Image (tube, rainbow, N blue to C red; front, side):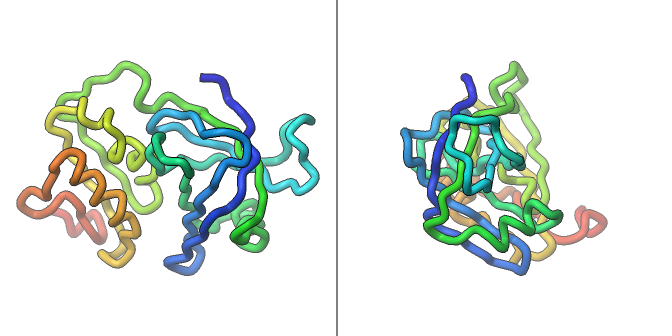
Length: 185
């Protein structure tokens, strides 16, 4: 799949914790096309018109199901670009997205007894798979997710969708592990 530029508008912004944001984008020029596990580039240049050289941008994993009309990303403010995002982006702001990139789940791999391990915002590329019908191709998947505290798990909606698709329920001890890895059994 070739990368395409999408002029998009920010439909919603959720700020669950200081320096953590989930953005939801709506395309202004056609439905987004991508596969689970892929990522995008976001450009904030207000003068960019879609025809000239691609401006300064940053990559983010898409956490949305590819069948959704919108795309969601979650980011932590860690550097100058994400600081600019925090200061500049508001609901209604227009941005350019370029996608899709990557082949995390489209490259050949064993789908039996697959182990998924992620912490914090690192879960986002997995969410696009966990909420997609293609996750049914995985036989006996194991999922281990780590968050600072139970309250830092901001992905309840997506994890509930996963449970509906696969009827995955936490095994003894739960499939979401919280806290420091040294505390895990």
